[in-house]
Structure formats: structure tokens, C-alpha cells
Length: 213
Image (cartoon, rainbow, N blue to C red):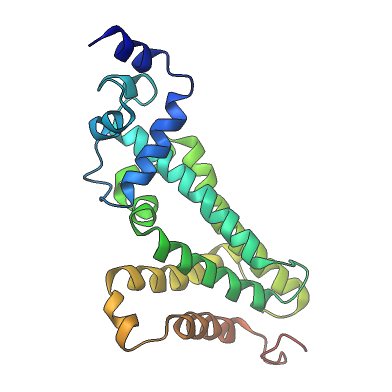
């Protein structure tokens, strides 16, 4: 290795951030399983050992990517929710659309975030914490709906898991069976039906579909 290469490998100003950015870019064209630390290093013009000064191994890099992915997902979900003082049913519907849209745009990243390669997330506290924020966001919507009288009062943890499972199921189906939505099913309508069916099941008998008593 030349002195110039050595300098780039070991004295790069923000190498960790650039490695992460390059890995995210490569993940759009390859699966998490095929992502290579060597390929990432080669794309940046640094030595093959340079990444290991910032990530212990490939799993640590994947965990960092997943952590970043959850951050982006949360930003998308919060932006989609809009005014959090209004209808909880509307918030949940907008969140679901944003969730499926994110999965559709970032298929490999989405698979990594919820796949087995970075599990258990307890090994990576930052990843564990940010992943929980997604569930907490759904819980907050449900709690808001209960306080407004839109939803029947029940355990928000189990209810949030049920809501998340339905939304995640549509997102996964969109990724794994794209032809279904190109030929037979309108994706947005499917999301709305899934969320609407869930909401109908937790709405008190005295509440109308628009959330007004």
C-alpha cells in the first residue's frame, strides 16, 4: 500500500460516516447477506482493513445501517402523521401509508431492519432503542384514540403489536409479491382496508366511523 493509500485508510476525516453512507448506497443494489466490507472500502478507495477501525465486523456495520434506517423510517412516519391532536384513526391510516411507502422504496434496507442478521438487537443498544420508538409511536396513537373515545380502552402494547403486524404484513407482501399489486390489487386501497378493518374491531359501539361519538 502506498503512503497516499495509507493516509486515506487511517486518517480519513470522517471515514465512519462515509463507510456507512456507501454501504447504504450499495444495499440498494444488493442484499444484506451479499454486502461486503471489502467492496465498501474499495468504493471509497481505502484499504480493506480500514473499515475495521470503525466496525468490528460486518454485523456491526449492518446494525449501524439498520439503526440509521429506523431513524429515517421514524422521520417519515412522524411527518406523515401531521397534526397529532386530530383523529387517531386518521393518524394511523397516514402512518400505515408512510410505512408501506418506505418499505417499497427501501426494500433491502427494510428487510435488514426486520430480518435476522441484526438480531437480537439487544447487542446494539442504539438499534434496540430506535426500533422500539416505532412501536411506541403506534402506542401513542392508540392511547390518543382511547383518550378521544375513538377506540375502546385496552392494553396499548398488545394492541400496538396487532396494528403493527397488520401494517407490516401489507409492506412485506408488497415486497415479496410485487406482481400482485401491479396486476390485481390497488396498494393504497389495500392499506386503507387493512387499517380500517383493524380500527373497526377496536372502536366502541357508540362511535361512528369518522371518529365522532
